[in-house]
Each structure stands twice: as C-alpha cells, then as structure tokens.
Length: 175
Image (tube, rainbow, N blue to C red; front, side):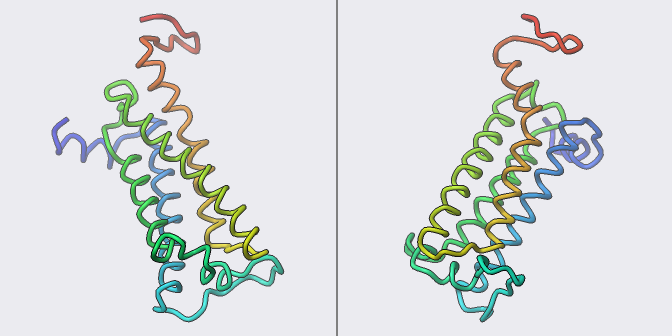
C-alpha cells in the first residue's frame, strides 16, 4: 500500500476494525503514560508516585523493590517499549488489513495476549514480594485486557481469511 493511501485510511477510515484499533492505540498510550510515570520515579527524576488512599496500593514500595530492577535496570522503560510496540502493531496496515494482510492483526493479538498474561503474572509477583500493588501498573494491565477484547473481531476475521473462509452475513463458508 502506498504511504499516502495508508495515511488517508488510518486518519479518515471509518471501518469498525479501524475504530477498535484506534481504541487499542489510545489504551496503549495510557499504558505508556503509566510506564513513563513509573520510569520517572524509578530513575530518580521524581521522588514520589502518589497513591489513592487504598491500603494495598503503594507504588513507591513496588516500583523501588528488587522485583522492579531484576532485569539489570528498572522495569518501567521496558513497559514503555512494550506499549509502544502494541501501538505500532495496532497502527500498521490499512483499514482492511485483516483481509489484505491477516498476519498483522494476528501478530497484534498475540502481542496483546502476551501483555495480558505477562502483566497478570507481574501483578502476582508484585503482591508476592511487596504485599502491595502499583496502581499505575494495574491501570496498564487493565488497558491490555481491554485491548485484547477490542482486538478479537479483527483477529477472528484474519484467522478466517488465512483459513480460506469468508463471512457471508454471519455464516462462515469456504471461499
């Protein structure tokens, strides 16, 4: 697809899949914003992450713990990269990519599924080590799950395309 056409489709297209992809991009930006805040704290740019008055939320404790630095550096920048990758996969391809390039929505779906599973495991580890959660991280986790739900219709179309099936008014048939 020519860049000009891609630009026009992404900015002006109105398909349901593209609308959901825009929502996934928005959720990825929320996740990235949470990652930026955590990263600022973990690297000393800011001294404190405020918490709502809920006893099991303590972002400072969680994001300064051994758990958060076990990869040789803080985990906030890694979180930022992962949400950026998700946003890129949601933005790649034209408005009909599930039929024209079905591997893109499948790759996006697998990436989001990986994010959801990983963030759930990380939440378990957060609690196990700290007996507290980082609400910024948990907001990002919710973004991953919401993104997974939004991605499912396009992923389904992409899988059907790869299998040579088409949707005829809700009834699948071989193409």
